[in-house]
Amino acid sequence: MPEFLTPKETDLQNRCSTLAHQVAALDPEPFSTDSREQQIRGLSQLVKVFDITQPASCGGSEGTALELTIARETFGSLNVAHERGLLGPTPGLLESVKEPLRSNFLMPYLAGEMNSGFGFTEPADAQRHTWAEVDGEELIINGQKSYVTGGAKAHFINVLVDIPQSGKTMLLIETSRPGVTLTRKFASSDGSQHAAFTFTNVRVPETHAIGPIGSGMKRALEQVTDVRMGIAATCTGLCSFVLEHLAAYLKKTDGKKSLARSNDLTRMRYGGLRIEAFAVRSALYRTARLIDIGQNAVNEASAVKVLATEALNRIIDEAIQIIGGQALTETHPLTQISSRVRALQLAEGTSDILKINVARGYLDLDKGTI
Ligand SMILES: Cc1cc2nc3c(=O)[nH]c(=O)nc-3n(C[C@H](O)[C@H](O)[C@H](O)COP(=O)(O)OP(=O)(O)OC[C@H]3O[C@@H](n4cnc5c(N)ncnc54)[C@H](O)[C@@H]3O)c2cc1C
Image (tube, rainbow, N blue to C red; front, side):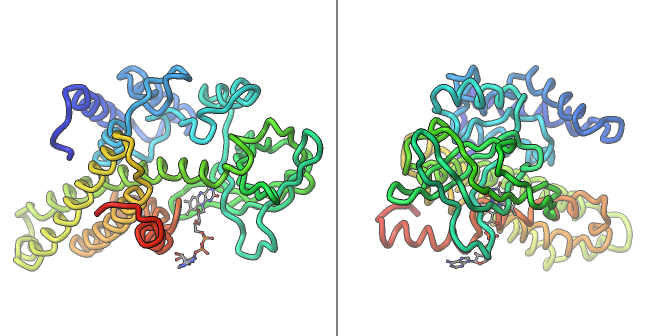
């Protein structure tokens, strides 16, 4: 639970809070996006937070699931979690790759010299899932991916492909390879940038397979669990931010709205939101601890991702409703958070799919706790 932290975890929480306050105090205007990111990165390195996302084998300080949760929740609770540069790039799927992928891609990626994307989602009208054929020591890839975040700036994409007779496999494909075409660039409502790609007879050496051939789905799902925990932690922190913002509004005693602010109906609604946030925060910390003791927590991470994203969207919606039109102005923090987080009920597994997965986990696989 969030209360029972060790002195080391409390120290990390304090450093993250200091960093978040520094970032919140930065003037948003005078920087380009890149120099702002650099400045935040420098601040994060100073308080030794930046590299907790990176494994010791790559020179990082390798935070536990709980430490990463503490960091992200703290950033969310001060509404800075969307700022780039707070945390270093995570190796994700590439964590245990061998040479030549390690020197050519993983290390430059962790050093910020290369960008990558994750190619999992297929367009709705795809005739066949992206596939690869083995040709000697090479693989030939054909197909398409539809929603690669950061794809336009990516030097390489980690792509899930189907290899007949062998199964789903993750392959690293450089975007500069002949046959890779960026067909569309678009942005979603949260402001993130995406790209769609086609692959036409793209050849890569077999050493571009990330892990053994046929282990792709398992690897993709392992990465997805970490990302789901990250989303859940950020959203949990944002629940606290929104509730503090709403509390400050409700406590105001000036003006003609003060009576409406303090009536029982509004208090009941506010109390309901706090109860929801309490449940989400408890579930988040419990799940992080399950991961750290090595328990299979795929179902719990799915559950807490659904809980946190859905609770946050409800809490923001209700907070805007209670505060009224002033909270809907473009520059208001609640409106800005609202457009950033709506996408999170879809990204990394829609709520409906994750609910079905949790049911399947228990009914068919005897997995998952309550
Ligand atoms: C901000 C953002 C970033 C993303 N980044 C990436 C990325 O980097 N790489 C990547 O590969 N993808 C990415 N995605 C895509 C994301 O993974 C997909 O949007 C998501 O998996 C849902 O797929 P879909 O959009 O095709 O919707 P669909 O799968 O078509 O779902 C549409 C609706 O149908 C429901 N549904 C679908 N199938 C079932 C079923 N069997 N039973 C019940 N209900 C069902 C869903 O729950 C949903 O409500 C990103 C999406 C967003 C919003």
